[in-house]
Image 1 (spheres, rainbow, N blue to C red):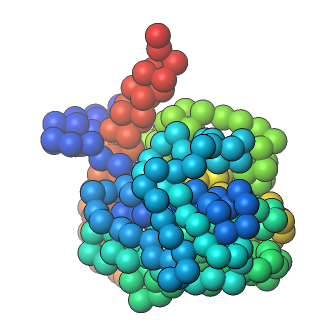
Image 2: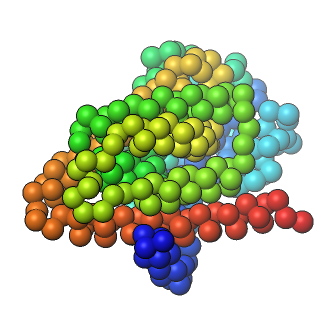
Image 3: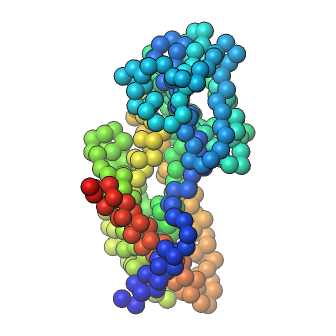
Length: 333
């Protein structure tokens, strides 16, 4: 109870602030191109923030504001977002596409292309690399290399996933024990991530995010006080990481689903995205362990440790309450 009261106090403080906190604060533009006949496509543009982002096509392509009648392939695409029709003299394969407007307001753009021959590809565009050539075929190596940086980006922008790893470091401190817990976390989230991304299991996004926040709160309550943090047993924390990893994997699958699954080389795309997530985890843990080692040399290292624990737990409590409310709104009348 003594640990829970400060955490709830931080949660109430966060809730009193105007606006809504988001665990995945992304400033991303999404450009989807669905080719339903050679050279004829529907283009949809969506952004997570108010910004002017414009896809630019070759000179022999024309665009019209009113999209063509929706086919079964493009019906769900036309129903939401800003859509227009694209007419090119020949198939889209091999053509270059540029996205203008990437910069301060929008940090990157995800280009998702579905060609009429069944080839699908996903590309991550930035201000320094805003042009891409639509591939003529989906290759295994291409699928891996395109989805790998997307996995790194997803984990490094997922505040709730990173805070979970930070709490593991605060509990265990020792690199070998942290590695054991991280391995258990990776094995479990890899299993649930693959199953959810392939559509073998279907879960509510709101419920998944609420459970992720609950895992943070429970782990924050498990951080030992004072010098006991150096002797925390590894096995119980690894067991928690194994269980909670199943829930976090569903969150990773949600990010993968938003990017779109290729129709070919699905396994390589999953492997690339998962490998990117793992590399991002290792990079973050390396920094967190280094900070923990430097902090442990201070005489009163438990004070900043407790401050981090209370702040993380308070934020997790706020996320849980906010996401639980979203769940009730979804299932309500």
